[in-house]
Length: 129
Image (cartoon, rainbow, N blue to C red; front, side, top):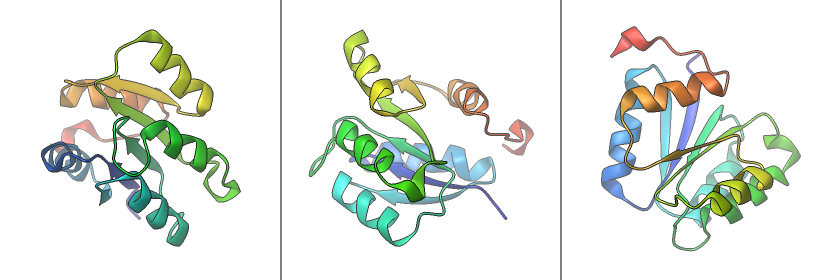
């Protein structure tokens, strides 16, 4: 059974890039263009291994999503990776304190994302792409 990832970003291009990388690594991906939609998806289906969460989103920002996810007992094993242009240390600290497991700043490349997945303890076959 493939690992599952929820990609939460308001940029269609960024969702496409992230899903392309993850699909190539054998993930099954689901997309959400805003925070409210992400929360609806997770309310229906908690069987995700990873969520990539943009900070700046309509409806509900990434920090609010992380806080909401960490408040849901069904989602305690879900790995959360903040994917954002926010570079201030205070923002990084805020996200980690709220329950994000890791943080990656845009722009990044496939190898940087792979490194973060390994840091999260997610085993990926880098030879797949």
